[in-house]
Structures are given as structure tokens and as C-alpha cells.
Image (cartoon, rainbow, N blue to C red; front, side):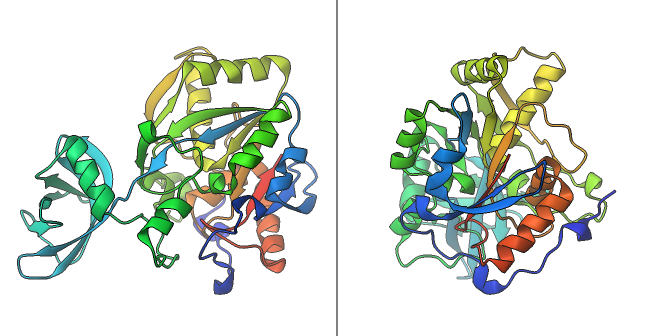
Length: 349
């Protein structure tokens, strides 16, 4: 059984991308055969030539919101509150940074105040806010910061971060992610148009990215890692396209690990006969995919290069094979691909 250390690798710091390539679809794309292990260096806008008539491309349309809030205690000390999951009106599960205690009040703006209710013991706090609903979202849209990963330096403009760290197909009605589904950042409207013109279906699913996606794996026995649950959904229309693809022998290609986790959570529900392929799906999922997992629906995976020892590199290893995956990473480092959220991508088929 593979252990946590097996998913480690050494990355030169200069390969961590600090901003996206412009235009987005000019990022590099490493095409990898799961069967042979052969690799081919390409560019992301050449993806249209890699796709086939009858393929279904599945994207996660969740929208990132400015979940990072900076406030002050009455003593003047700084507190950072990272919104993670909405519990009920006015109450959120949050990550909290700074010297804090229960019942501490934190001023975030003239209109917004937070009260730290309790430490839940898993790294998160329950936090009550004095404002809720639409008014709350309006305030955080104004004062909040995009939840960029710690390895990315914030841009000079908060507005630039809001544009760069968002897919072009993010749906306002599906706002809820605290990290971007980063494989999707490479798509432009121009590229999507070419893909659709080729006869490839592009369908949307939703997974609100939270701690389940980006929390690090800390157990040496990776099977003991517990994923936080994240909300996933798949409409009837999207589900019907998946059914048609399987009936005609087309490939289902997940754009990113989050879209993959929606599809496989759905596939598991179908396998358990909880619903039929073609039915709509909505659930909280804590699916953890690591080597040994048997994929139910996904035939291809487009994904960025992920952090060492992360659940994401484990998912890729499950799909592409462990040796293939680590060889892919060695090639990407040798060829100076750009890594992580704003980095380049790989396409495993």
C-alpha cells in the first residue's frame, strides 16, 4: 500500500506560477497516455484537436467568492476569518487566524461584526455574523479578498484577483467555492466555442470547493485520511448527456479533480442503485479517491499539477497510475512547466 511519503516530490520554487498566462488558453498542456505512459508537450488551445466527436467535457461551474476577511479585535489585534461553509442564517464554519478565544468579537467593517462561538476541534470555528442573506454577500463582495492559496502573492488589484481566480463559465447562481476549480482557469470563450463547434458536448456540474479539496493529508497511511464534505450537484439535463455518451461509447472527460469527484460520487450512487444513470443528483460528498479506486464514469482527466502529498495528486495517481503520474511530474519539472493554481495542465486519457 502506498504511503504519504510516496506522493512527495521536490519542486523548484521558481516553477510555482504567480499569475496566469495571458491569454489563458496559451498555458502549456502535457498530454499523457494512461496505457503506454507516452507524453507529448502541447499547448492548452490545442485541446480541441485532442478531443473527439462524441466526447463530453464536464466542467465545474461553481463560483469563487471573496471568502477571506480581515478584522480587528477590540484590543486592536488582527484576526483573519476564512469563510468555509454556511451553516444557517448568520452562522458559518470558518478557519480563524490570530490569537482568539470563544465569544471574541471581531470588527470587519462598519456594518459587519463577527462573534467566535466555539472551536470545533478540527481546525474550524463556528462564527456568528450580525448580518445575513443578500446583505451579507453584498458586504463581503466589497470588503472580502479572494482566497488565493498561500503560495500566490496577492495582485496589486483586488479586482484583478477576482478576474484571474475565476473560470469564464462560473455561474453566479452557483456561488459557494473558497478555492477555484483551477483546471478550468485555462478555458476562454474562444476555445469553448471551437470545442462545441467540433461536436463535443460541454456540460456543467457543481462542486463548491472547500476544505475537502485543499486540506492537506497528514496521515502516513493515506487510507485514514478523512475528507471534509462538499456540496455537489448535477442537473437532469447534464445527467442525460452522460447517459447518451455512455450509450454511444463516447468519452466522459472531467475538467479538474472537482468535476471528477462529482462524477464519481454520482457514479457510486448509480452503482449502489440509489438512482439511475440519467437522473439528477444532489448530495454532500466526502469521496476520497486514491490508488486502487475503480472509476465508474470518468474516461479522461484534465488537471493542473498539484501540491506534494495532497489528496489531489492521489486522485490523479488513481486515474493515471502511480508510476505514470510521478513520471509525468518529473517530466513537467525537467521541462519547466508552471505548477499549481495558475500553472499549466496535463491531459490524461
